[in-house]
Image (cartoon, rainbow, N blue to C red; front, side, top):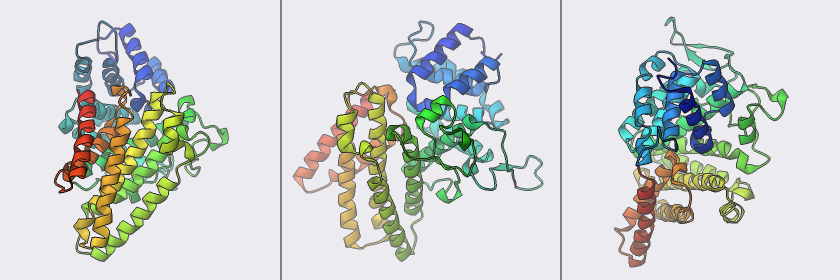
Length: 409
């Protein structure tokens, strides 16, 4: 029943394909834990079949392969969809992960409406499970199934280190997508940064091994993961920090009101925080180092993920500065802000120029959102009276079109 009529050999082949190719899903799914649960028959059916759908587009198995490859997931998605209602009635880490994968799958197929629906379902389930308060000193907040009170506080959850880290990574992923997608649609984010009490993700090495480097760390909520050692292993933590900053930016730009003085003060504070985050990046993650250390080193995955980190930074700069006219008419703020937007958009375009040889399959939701955000600025530049600016905007937009065309479904 778990396999839904699929042969065990095909399922195992697809699982192997998934973990050999899908780096974005591996950010929220631990391979060892997934395989262990599958072998024991305790894995969430939705998680399993959504993962098989994600693997199908990479598969060379004749029983799966289609032309074009983007249509290969269709029968697996159809099966996963039949499992969604049961999953919603049984909130769990595995079911939340399954909803998140469905969100990613529909985005890769270009269906933004369904992507938004699954994003909302995944976000709500994570909140129901208390993942946004996972590391609160009072313990995660969970719904009271007896409905005698709105919420109850539990001091412990039946989670080992790997599951707790998976919950953290899942939360940061959905939190980031929620903030970026909400702003793109002109909506306020569903949850503010102040309502998140989740530590930064552990290093990639710890995540892959399924245990902390120092065993005494355990899964103590009070023990905050470190940003140290190989910076490339800590990219998830830097992304999480940036997500928190972007959340505050999103809240500011979607809640501008008559309090001009307060909005300007918040803008100044966020501008400082964002700059400090960038200045705090280790030298190994600076753009001047990225090209020489990673590009052409046969590890395009590392290069891609560092590029996305910088693209997200520049997209956040654009989001913050593009909204200045919404809360002030001060030309001394608006002028420099507009110039920052143009520079940031150009930086994103330059990163795209340097990554044409990166596999299309690697590009994820964050990548596309940054591409679209920068493209908006280039479109505004076409309205300029400066012929040089118009020419550069056309060149940059050509780069964006090529990436979107090659990365489309």
